[in-house]
Image (cartoon, rainbow, N blue to C red; front, side):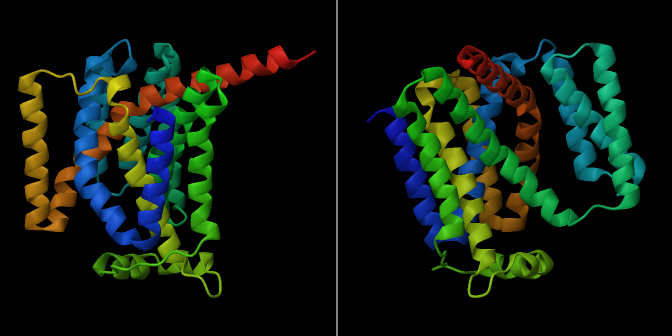
Length: 301
């Protein structure tokens, strides 16, 4: 089976499971596949110098941003410092000069301080849903679009069309939950205001949202492991492989002890791999825009 058809099958399988077991799909993907994805991707990024000229600077900035995200007090200076680090991290990933990077960091700090002072709309929903949609769905779509534009064959667009159809199904097709548990109860209570504004008479919006997130997470992870031959992340030294597997086993052990403990243990890996992947995401976005602009210029009579 070709890579494109394999991706199409994976998309529909993940979407189908998420439609009937949204809670189980989301928690299972995040708890089991997630840590394996974080560890192998960090290893893969490390071998490619994180797609920046000064990888040590990126690692230090990502580590500092991670520490601030986890332990910072909820004050304007702390939010300003976090936004400054994230802005500088993105600017460094794009390859901007040092002065421009500093200006971006300062502007980001101002945005962070202003947001902390003026207040954020639906803070909890934004903090959870938006990064998820951007990282595990938008960036996955962006990488697939880049591959399709590079291949320039109709078959290369099949995974993109399948992903679009699967995502739309959570709006068009009802979602049920054959294994509803404590997570859905907590989600409905915690985001009652958001779900109330999104609610449609006769439809369970919360199931659709959790189902879509379960689909987005599960396919994001499965898509990564399907690219074994292309990425070559599996070709690692025995010592590093032992380190990766043992770390994954420790995270799994934490989940078996207590789900909250597992989430706390895997959170640094999750946030860390997102921060370290930023330069690659920016580079991919630039290539996609450049390719689209080149085609539009060629099509002008």
